[in-house]
Structure formats: C-alpha cells, structure tokens
Image (cartoon, rainbow, N blue to C red):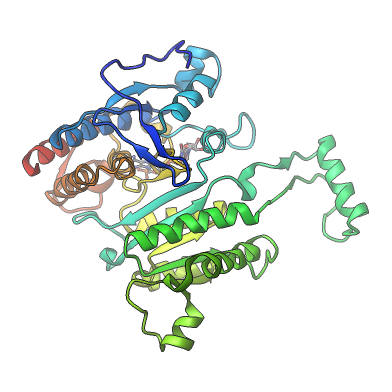
Length: 420
Ligand code: NAP
C-alpha cells in the first residue's frame, strides 16, 4: 500500500481473513482501523466516536490503532480528488473501517462518494439497526416496541446510478431504444426527459437476503420481512421477493418457514428456533412500522426502499442523531451513521455524536468484541437517560442538561469507566 497522506500506525496489527469461504476474520487485540472523519459535522462526530470507542476497547483489555484516511473535502485538500485510491486501498486491505458523512451535491456535480465506496469495496449490505434507548424523546407513544434491523441492498437498484441527463446523446439513444426497438411509444412525453435504469439481479437479491436470514437465525430473531413494490415493478421488486422465497426454500430447510406455512402447517404457532419469512408492499410497510411496530424484526429490501424505510424507522427512536449503520461485505465492513453532513452545524461542536458512536458499536460487534459493544450501548443509554444530551434531544425534553458534542463524548466515556 502506498502512503502519500496516510500514516500507518506502528502500534497496531492488521486484521486478516481467517476463512475465505465464510469471511470470518482474525482480529488482533490492537487492530489498525481506518477512519474517515467526513465532511461537515464529520469533524465533530468523528473524534467524539473515536474517544468513546477507545475507552470501550481499553476497558475490555484491547486498543484501536486508528489510521486517518481521507475522502470528500479533506481529500480534495490533500490529493485534489474526492476519493483517492489510497483511501479505497487502505479500507480494502485493513478490512474493517468507520466513516463519518460525506456531502453529495444535488442535481449536478460528482456522484455520491458513499455509494462509490460501498460499490468499490463490494459492501453489499447496508445494515441499519433501529432500537430504543431509554430517555430518548420520540414522536410515538411506545418507542420501546421498535427493535428492527434493516438490511438494505447496496450495489444495485436505482442507486447503481445508471441514468442519463435530459438533452444528452445517451438519453436520446435510450429513448429511441425504448420506443423503436421495444415498441413502447406511449409512455415518454415529448420534450426533455431524463431516463434511469433499475437493475435488480437474482445474485444481488439473494446474497442480501441470505445475509438477513443468517443474521436472524444467529440472533434469535423471529421474522425476516421482504419489503418491495412488486405489485407495480413486477420484474424488479417483484422478482426480489420471489428470489427471497426461493432462497429460503432452497437453502434453509426447516429452519426457515414462510408466513403461509406458518398458518397452513403450524396454525400460526411458530416452531422454536425458526425464522418466518414474509413480505410486505413498501407503502404498507411504512404504515405498519408505525401501527404494528413490534411485529417486525429483520427487514430485507432494495436500496431506495431501504433508504426511505430506515430513516422513517429511525425517526421513531430519536431521529438521525441516533440512527447507526454498517456496510457489510464478505469479510469486510465499513460502519457509518445514517445521517448526512448537516453542513449548517459543521465545526460547531453541537450535533449529536450518538449515531456515529453507535455505528462504532456495530463495528465492535463485527470485530467480535461484544463486551465492548455492549459497554458502548449501555454507557450511551445511561448518559441520555440521565438527561445529559445534545441540542437535538434537549429541545424535545423537559429539563435536562444541554451538552456540546465533545462534552457528550466525555460523559459517555465517564459512564464506560463506571460500568466497566
Ligand atoms: P443530514 O445531513 O442528515 O441533516 C439533516 C438534518 O438532520 C439536520 O439539519 C439535523 O436536523 C438532523 N441531523 C443530522 N445529523 C444530526 C446529528 N448528528 N445530530 C443532530 N441532528 C442531526 O441530511 P441532509 O441535510 O439532507 O444532507 C446533507 C448532506 O449529507 C448532503 O450532501 C447529503 O447527500 C449528505 N448525506 C450523506 C450521507 C452519508 O455520508 N452516508 C447520508 C445522508 C446524506 P435539525 O436541523 O432539525 O436539527
């Protein structure tokens, strides 16, 4: 690996692959972890998360050797490009990393660096857990009913970014293909048009759904819900659903049953240790998550639905300041919060670092450091439950103490030390 603007820490060891087939890792007690602080509020939440994760590692007899790598604004300053190869190589080589948010211009300008990173590293599953922490203000009456994990496909769907701009030669070719070759001449109105392509493959769908089912089985979850708009987009979103059921039948034997089997063969009584696979149409699911929250467990869906769904679910447990995520591939992971770079708050030491800290918790789980991961969750919960919160939660609760980003991180570290 070349190191133009990256210092490889000397006090850390590299994580390596233990098993090619399963993607299992060899994790030393002092792993080198690349970190991208990110744009906007990334410079606030990145260091705060590092401080908390360091404390959790130390409290459990380990250490993290951080390796700063760059993307977005800091990469433009150092390399004069948005996503240097060195950054991609560092994450690929060290296998497990964490990043803050990166800004994506709307309408024009460069494509999303987040999407590019996930695709270049083949991090096909964007895993977004939504669970309630005591003391977090919520717009719903029973937020504690929310305990879901969304598996969002990361490499295809409309996010694959195959689209052509109105007025371009490519869009003209695509329009002619649709109208002349395919004979569909009554859909596209005259005048400027933008055209996009939505690929959904059997391979992409099955590997994502497999990841979701494996997770459900390993973590004692009851259901995996395939969320799709297959009634309208039959051969893309509908196929995703069909491939999901096919996979459940082909690969899991009696461990996984469908919702139909649950009622037809088991009278609605789920056999111990099994996972039920069901499916819901996306628009219905957005209301089910509000009205029947506790009936859902693990959700597997395509990229765009997953983006909408996880933000909506996140709103029920405290919003974007709280919601964590991790992108997982085969023997590789990149943790990142659901929120963006919120440029208006950049550098103000104001925003909530919980989402970034809890993304770090997901990273610790991925490393197999469950004790450290639990400590992080418990310490964050204790801090919030005691009313010591950042502005976003403070404006929604009576009383409480408003903390800066860095003060919140200090308070969580204190609680880690007390709990350890
Ligand atoms: P955003 O950055 O997530 O911010 C939207 C609002 O959410 C903020 O104004 C703030 O609300 C609240 N918020 C977000 N993070 C918070 C935190 N840590 N603590 C407290 N409140 C928080 O969304 P955006 O404004 O739509 O996007 C800004 C940029 O981020 C865009 O360029 C977008 O493409 C990018 N983005 C990147 C990622 C990523 O890197 N994975 C993800 C999403 C968006 P209030 O103002 O109401 O307090």
